[in-house]
Length: 637
Image (cartoon, rainbow, N blue to C red; front, side):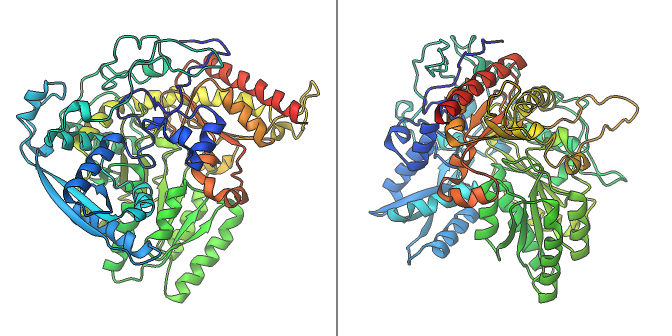
């Protein structure tokens, strides 16, 4: 599946990546496209047929919300659709407490004739014809609507973005079916693209719309992105799929990847060593939903234990919405944006001061590794501080991932965005929260979570996630090797490699730094590396450094030239089976550029999520883009 060095497969502006109805990325192929998107320019916003679901509300959800506004809304009202009555109340509270002026907010519920997963027959096959599928779905499906003045839409949208509590596009489509909305009225991705690979100056992807990754349509056989999301395996019925997901995650956290494709493995039960079991794995509709619920779980459990729920600590520069959750819900947080060893003494001081004041720190949130600087916190020292001051540690291990890191020794709760490399196919959202039975507050956390847990994960999304994740360890192994090769090549051409600003041929180096766990806080990363279960033999899937690398360029024109000339797919998200790049700071921190730059995240960054293409293809894209960046720097100097 090789291409020439200058071939471009990037999809044209605004189309889904991959080219599927429930894709969770959208093509933003040029630097200017990203700037204009961040500015809300009509040229880009009007071209976008979809986007990352927490940032761009899927068209089927928009249509359903509009219908709800027409039927249940008052003049001048808009609405948000969330997954449960409890979450509707949370949205209402958020709007009331964060509005700059008094605002009228109300919650409404409506029941549609539908089904719950429990009524699906054991032999149900999701590929059956619609009429066969309908006979098994008779239980009610509820709409949970939060109504507010239209001028409060931006604030309501921030709730949707931060928490991930909005309904999924598959759920919305089912609601539209039950409302007898004609299929012709349901927005879908555009059709009619030709199956061609463009020259470097063009950007069409050469794909045609497909209803699912299981049924690629004619004309896609030569499309590289679509080939990497293709799947010919059979999905499981919902109940089996859900159990298989929990089992797969529990086994992965134990380092068991011996049968990555097996869906009928026996459950992981508690054993004398008290390692994680199926029952310790809780599924959510997305990674941010898992983090929001984790934060709520901690605050509520601490209060239930009769203690004061104090602030949390956010250690390291995290994905932006994690910090927003800690700041906007509960008592707030102390932010250690660098997250380096030099911060540890200050963390201890803050914890000591909080304990002495009677408002102790309740939790410390961190990422292994951080996004986008790929730093790994000193988990050994953080665990010591946490034990001393009775602080719960929550680790988001999404970037490190199950194959590469083992953080169970250090953490009380593990959260993961399953949307990323665990799924890989970029067509479904998902998240998980896993309790660590080895930690002292496990029983209290588990008892409270068991009594309050809501099954919010839409059953069709569960089935899709299970199907996507069957071979996740194998995919990560391929991606690990590709990413390391690309990172090594770029590192050798960076200033930080040898401290020289010029290369051997006298040219000024355009790459200032390359962030990758192989050399960023390496000692801390190695402390978290997964070791093989059997020390006598080589592991089936050895620990690597993950898919993400971030390039810091000498200036913005160089970063722009590199990005514009990079031939891979370009858009939000990461952990995809295909290579995907984005100007991270523009997308995540455009409204706070100076603040982000203070923590080493300036605008002239390009983040690359390396995929499963052959190594030569990816290196070809990178080499071509780097030549363009060097030419741009030469022109500006």
